[in-house]
Amino acid sequence: MKLLAIHRKTHGVNPQLHYLDFDFSDEDSGRGSFDAMASVMPDRVPGLLAEIGVVLGWAVGAFGPCGASGDEAEWGYELQGISEPGLPLKVVYDRGVVTLTPAAGASRTTLTLTLSGSPAFCEAFRDRFEFDG
Image (cartoon, rainbow, N blue to C red; front, side, top):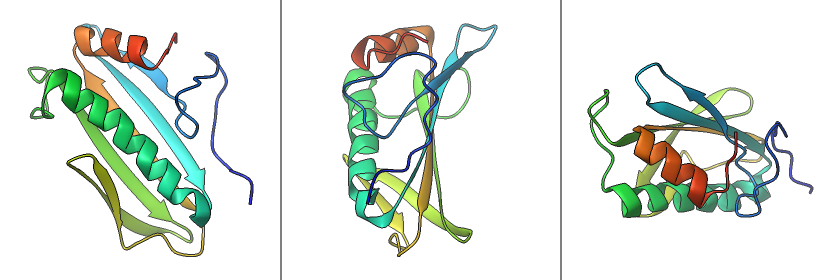
C-alpha cells in the first residue's frame, strides 16, 4: 500500500526524512519549534517510528537529554498519536526507540512530533536535516 502522509511542500524535500515534513515557528525570545505530522497505514508505522527515533536520537546526541519544559531548557519535545477511529495512543521515546501503546492496529495511525529549543538548537536542526523554512 502506498504511503499516505501529510506533507506541505513549502520548503523543499528533505532527502533524509521520508515521513516527517516539518514546519517552523519562532518566538520573540529567539526560541523556536518544529512541528510535523504523519498519517500512515499499518505497514508504514515501523518506518515512521524509526524516523522519529532518528530525529530524537540526533537531538539527544547533539544537545543531551531533553530538558524540563520552559524557556531555560536547551530543547524539548512532545509526541502524540491516534489510531483511527479515534483511539488515543501512548507514544514513548526511550533510548533510541519509539513505541506505541497499544500497538498500531489495522487502521491508519497519525503521529505528531513537536521539537522546541534554543536558537542554537534550531540552527543545528536546520543544518542536520537540511531544513530551510
